[in-house]
Image (cartoon, rainbow, N blue to C red; front, side, top):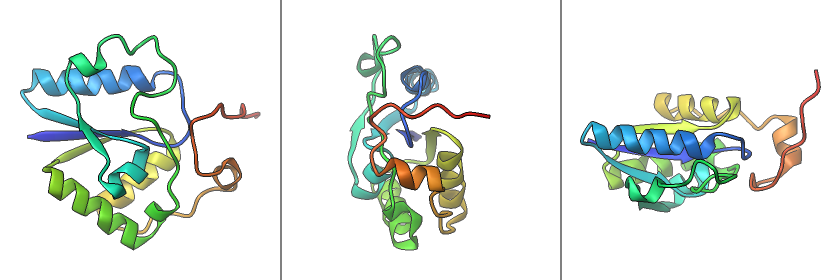
Length: 140
């Protein structure tokens, strides 16, 4: 079995720890693991790398995400979803772990159900296409 992992949306504390946990658990279950670079964009474009225990050694204390992250307008289309599914099939991935917030979870659910992704929220649209910088704090 082969597992894929990606990070999506804005950077957040704990993303590297979550990546490390996925890779180590895959290793313990005798599964292969690949990491998709730049979130759903990398999944669409087929940008991935093999993940090993060595590739996640010493990443917990690093900020950001070693896989990088981005928001993807193309993923909100059926064509983008189809391209993502083709990449999963081409790389032999049977399960995908998506690390991110609510928008990432909705995108993962839409991919699983093969439905169009909901349009980005106003906050996501204002933030732009890159999730590599600091995000403003939310106020209640």
